[in-house]
Length: 580
Image (cartoon, rainbow, N blue to C red; front, side, top):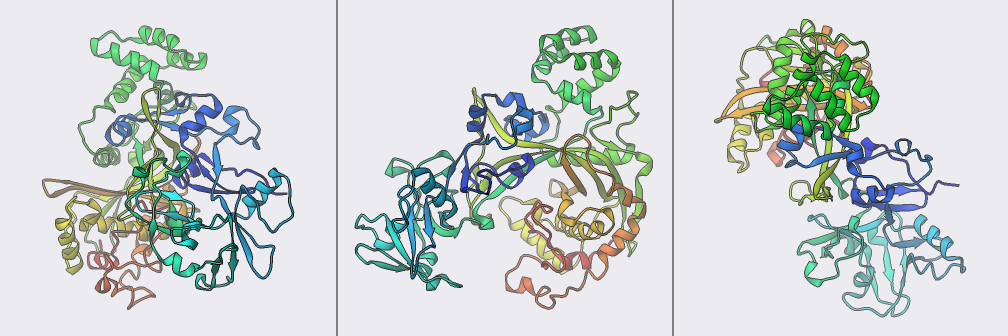
């Protein structure tokens, strides 16, 4: 017997699912409701599960706060206890137990050609037989297919089910018939048409009650399992602070830091005052004892970093991270190991392990810095439906006691930071000119269109494949983070972070950083045969028929878990014309 629920990981919720997504369960598909309904359901507040990242909150989330989705284990509940609120969707089902036709029916009514059963059995059967088609628009709305309007074209005869004729390999072979008035429609033709959108945000419940709430966009019929039915929009931030993980976790308490922020500017903060505020904030005894055992000079330095995280001079999260990564690669982080055993830092780069690697053509030297520990916070800010280029964003924010919150996840791992050792990246050739023109003509100045960004992004995808051969991670498990800093039209910094992360405080096992010692071989393998592809000449000639760059799955494209730009802004020939 199948389980009536589906287990999901918090990271899976943030990265691929979230409010408004359709989740397949043993009792049929369901839609996940908004996150605030979860905290109402479990009787807890988002503050109990807050993830603190001041830079991310200030620079990207308009000072909103971040909460992780709790697990059953955290709540002390059995693993088979369902805690996240959902509702069944879609409501229409298709019964395949009949010949020569099948029956399309409303779940609440049950299949009219099946024996009468109890209400609970009828709903369970309908869930298992849920129709695989839904209706969506580019403004983010999702609803049932309006089967009555599809068959009757604006009218209706009052029927609650339809006869489904045909099937097989093509939708054009499917014909839907009304059993009462015998009106029919070809489903293949209906699938290809546009339909009026109801304006429904499905995670909020029913359809809008007012006719004025209807959407002006045209809706399309799509399969409920389509990859473009819901595309998560993520914001992430790398935590680069020179302090132990445990000290960061203690100082992340908002009650404590609120008091510290009030005392610190007035010069009234010392270790005694901090202990008093920690007790007032209700910190656990082991946290207070840790503060007592830690030298005040170290605590004071950590407090300066925590308070300064919200007042960094940079207006861009990426520019700030790039500056900190370059500084870490130059001088190392932390400068001095922490004296307490079992207190690893949140971010660690050993300066003595940083290497300079010449490219195979000796045009550039790459500085390769192993990041043996890192913390990444990922936040789902919203989602899009159908076309990521044109679709509107639907926010996943929720309000709680006057504060805006987003769902997020805290991940730990390792990585490799790569930038140029002192020299600038001067690109030439026809492909660089083409990307430069595209960047200048873009009204928003999208940095992913800049030729330097395209160069780093392209070499990133080649390195992803090369690293996966020896690191022990699949290419889908390694993520990228491309940096480009442009000021007054001039590139002042660029680089690349390849990393792998997982939930929990232990991070990963060092498979990436161990490859820094033989990075020449990794780079040589990555750039081998970059000027050719097994899909040439089709791949090479793709821009002549409208593609942005020269890239395909045989030579460059990576999985969606790795590429933060959805495989856009890549060009193999740009890299081939400007090999390092």
